[in-house]
Length: 374
Ligand code: GLU
Image (cartoon, rainbow, N blue to C red):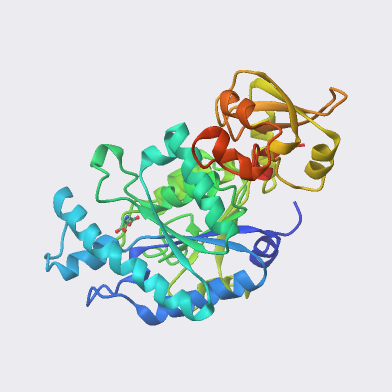
């Protein structure tokens, strides 16, 4: 593999997820928001957006902020109290993002997810579609776990893994975990001065897993262990992941300028793993397209119902279908944006006719361009 630098990976990325932990956002002493740091982070986001990148933020901090407001003492909170703190803190957290991004003319959008939203197929597709629309509209989704409704058995509990799921679900190219350590060491750097630093990990071996200690920082749920688990999820989705120190001002700019980081980069190129995943799915049906639609697809457009002339098979939304041209030749494999019944109702229709045919507002695309493997 050619030399991996933070700048090369970030420059090549279209979609970037930045995960921000509670320890960065909330001052450990006062329990209040570190507004200046967040304002600097917003400058990083604006800088990346100016380069044409789509940015998602996965942010913790609701419980840490809320517990201070509610006057809860230090130490572990009961689930009920943690959920109450999250409800009070999340509203402030979201507002803080709106306030720091606003001056850059960037709209913040709040997304609260539970584990089920990424595991249940229907909810997964819905969450993904909404996030996709928000990104297309140029907003920055601010994602957190929906702590107020998630009970222990159904919680992620740590935002490292949530961030990796979000990165995988949205087909992000890069995930940056802003942390209190600058990367992965062969031993915990807070205890051993001679710890060996690992700048690049390409396979997560049992040795790498063993190097990851447990959670250490007050107020944060994730430790190196959850970060390595997150790396597994990200790499599996073809997303490169970095662990770097977040405490500096403008940590993403620092990363671009060569700050220390551990990069987890699998062999799959960004985007390729997803296409490979689509290619490997079982075909449930066929969409026959006219020549105009085939030409539009090869220009990277989504497939609109107007270009579909025939539909074969019985498939659910999200299942794989073959895309064939007027001559019957297969041109792509794709995930259906509609189930077969609805797809038949709207094939050949203009987008403006969809609502009339279905009785509800549907999505414009029969297949989104991100869901196609040509
Ligand atoms: N969702 C939790 C919060 O907002 C944070 C989880 C974590 O620390 O990773 O407080």
